[in-house]
Length: 247
Image 1 (cartoon, one colour):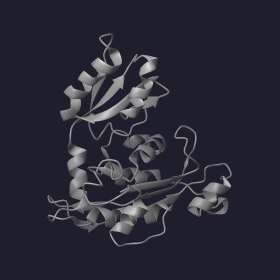
Image 2 (cartoon, rainbow, N blue to C red; image 1 turned 60 degrees about the horizontal axis):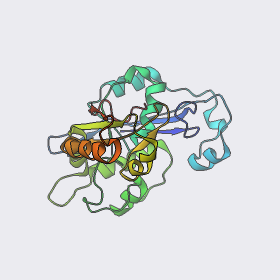
Image 3 (cartoon, one colour; image 1 turned 45 degrees about the vertical axis):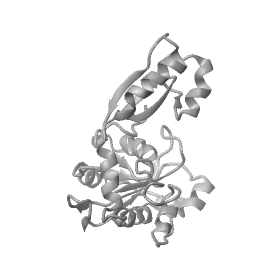
């Protein structure tokens, strides 16, 4: 499990100021059977924190002064993982890949985005809200607290005797595709947005990830409603190793 606190939301320019990781073992049924020691590092970003970040995280400039992530230990821990789990991996992974490039290419799973929380009997996806629905409370927005809360959430038992972790692993292992609507006509933007596509400003196309079973139907919809016979989308296979990598 992994969580970061950062100087802001810009994955290209903002920096990690706190990194927390915790190894754990699980059995074939998705039950957590062993929990390692949590490791937490702070890092001086070299600039003064925005007062809103201080208020949000409780971290101050004085607490971060001259602090640095232990890259060697962080690499040892992360490189040993079969899977890195974060509750919003689309946010955390680009920061970690940039700060610790030696662990790029590891498989990641997102406990926020991948499980069907409504189907599992929950409402909402925020970590604090999910944990609250399990009957627990914690003080969020600190990396160590967040990975501890995530540990309890993953271990939570669901009807039928399965755990949240088992459901997450099932989701993570499913093959999927990233659909890139390259050269889609401008007038189709509202259709694409309504269907769940997101604009990639760097590559200048709309894209979304779909399950393997939806590939034929999604291609047919695009050819009928978006391309109308002129052009075609690009479908790229995606595994846990490629998910949440910033394009």
